[in-house]
Amino acid sequence: MSVPVPRQRDTPAPEGGQAVLHTAAPPAATATATAVAQATPQATPPATPPVAPHTIPLTLLVIEDDPAGGLTVPEILDADGHRIRLRTARNLTEAERLLTPDVHCILLDLSLPDASARMAGAPAVPGAAAAGAGTATAVDQLSALRQVLRIAPRHAVLVLTGEDDAERAAEAVRVGAQDFLFRDELDGRLLSRAIRYAVERKRADIAQYKLAESKLRAQENARLERGLLPTPLLEGSDLRFAARYRPGRSRALLGGDFYDTVRTPDGTVHAMIGDVCGHGPDEAALGVELRIAWRALTLAGLCGDDLLATLQEVLEVERPHEEIFATLCTVDIAPDGRRAGLCLAGHPAPLISRPGRSARLLPYENSGPALGLLPKARWPRRQVELGGTWSLMLYTDGLIEGRIGEGKERLGQDGMVDMINRHLERGLSGEGLLEASVTEARRLNGGELTDDVAVVLLSRAEG
Image (cartoon, rainbow, N blue to C red; front, top):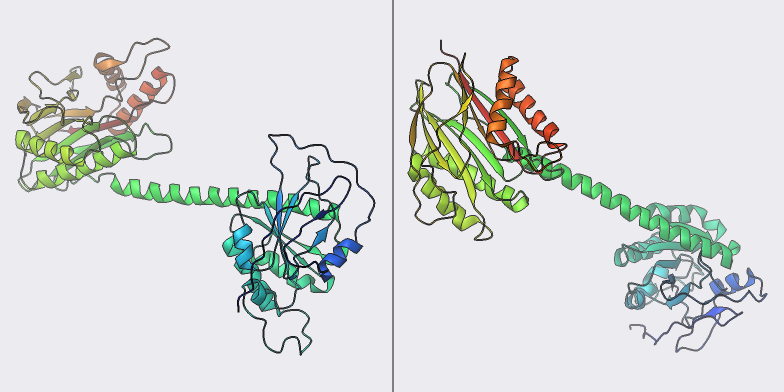
């Protein structure tokens, strides 16, 4: 038979008196209440100042199986001198009902007869009273604590026991309680301090848990993003590949910029670089989808206008909003490495450098619109002569849109070309050239670039 749940209410302590919780059942004294009352002087405490409207007092939920629910404790004051409100519950069913968001701490008596069974609302273990058990077994008592921790994972929990149960009290702390109190030593001052300590320790534990959880999530995201970064497929090609990538989002490894390079069975090397407008997680996800789609379509044999038209269809289906668009630059380098086909979809033109000549931008007239802007758009493919020895740099606008100094002037394509030529005159190439260029762009900007930056460098040396 289940134990009926009496109606209960919080009763504020009278001025200069004790805080007493009453229930609808008849009053009765318990061993716990007697010990607490005897340990506390009955002198009248000083009047408590009124609680400021903005102050939220602490609330203590006492769980004990006294049928009367008449646990009497001395007045408890928090650190600001305000009374700590008290509630009592006889079983877990009642405790769960009283466990409202304003409860800060729970006090559980471990030494009550058949604690776990009664608090669960079940009948006492047969024969326990006849055997003179007096207290439940350690397993039962800690089972009750585990149930309390299960229904109140974010609340501070104190356990109350006798001095002869010190080992059991320590085990309760190992299970998850914030602290334990000895019944014979309990008084209002000690209980008040223990409540404050338990509440703050629980807050620290939750903060530490969230920090550890955040670190694990960051590690998982980092592994995921590293796995989504491309691996160039250039086996059998005499081209050298280098890349630099800096997402604009703080603590991210992946942004809305994307790039890839593959070699098809006929010996053609296909390279591309793109930029989804914006640099949030949605744009990063869309950039990964477009890159994977580009690789699959390229390996399937599509090129030029057919490839870009199909990518636009993918973008239109996958983008979260109709306003999202993406710029793209694709290059397909002939097997002999001396010429290439170039398609631009609203993207900055690549930069080419040759021995003994200054670096310059490839022609970008008659380029097509960005993907996702115009339905049924066309993207003309332009034939470009590369020569025998060359370096071709593809980049996103994050590299050229950084500011120069404190004014509003941007680096721009012309400034980027001058910067690259200075580095080439110093003899830089490959990874060193890209690293120096991105570093100087950041320095000119006066700090980290706000937009995603991706740079790809393909090089060929004849002979």
